[in-house]
Length: 120
Image (cartoon, rainbow, N blue to C red; front, side):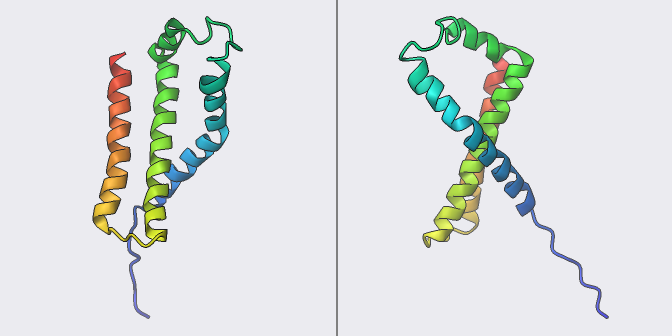
């Protein structure tokens, strides 16, 4: 019997980020659109709830920073994974370049969000 070693893959990491981002997109995406696109502009929310000072206080708290960073980064990874596999589905096989570009943008966006939230 021959001893074969399985090839290691990074795919489970990306699928996990994709799944977490997809769950957040499904659960919080419509709510964010409703709040920022309809409820706030139409005055359905108290002015204090959507004020600049209120949003700044959220972004300055440690828990708020963690939630915002998690939401932004997981949505970016979800989008990158979906775009990469959609390109493959429509016949655009970019190989390592397409993978580096899509996931690289997600990684850069994740680091940019972390840097910007750390400066607030």
